[in-house]
Length: 186
Image 1 (spheres, rainbow, N blue to C red):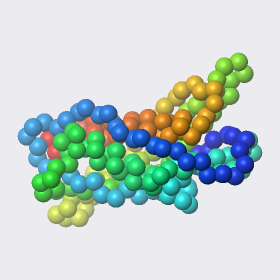
Image 2 (image 1 turned 135 degrees about the horizontal axis):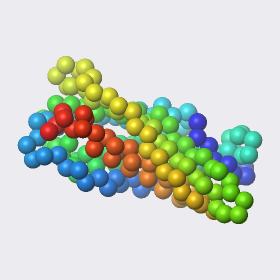
Image 3 (image 1 turned 45 degrees about the horizontal axis):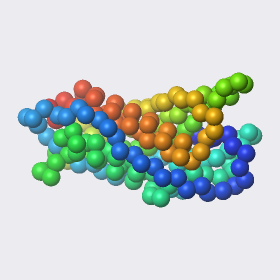
Image 4 (image 1 turned 180 degrees about the vertical axis):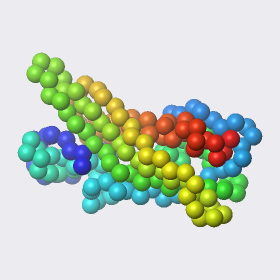
């Protein structure tokens, strides 16, 4: 479970996540199949689907949460869908496959430096499964973890939203560049 060290009282802090992946690895023109993006499951250790990440004090006690305007799984699905459309995986034609996704973990960790800003490591773990619509059987699955390390002097909701977008972008890039995944379409 990801948490962030803060000194805040219990609160819900709204954040705006602008997740628009920038992946430019289009499929070859002679495509064998297309897919549809299915619902995204959110298996993270949060009870509220709008919680991006829990806040925590120095003792690990939850002191609130950063919350999004839409469910986090929906935000991820919208960005994933856009990236797959841009790269030719999803079309209006008959789709042979459904891509299922499961957000498993989003977290931030801080290493406090005495004379410089803290080093912040963020990560997002997502499991994907490709299902053949004719047999309803999974034909491929993989789990990716996007990571980012940066230095920051103070963490804000905006910073956390940006970190989510960065690591989600890495996950989508890993998916789209995966040769075994692409082999179903090229």
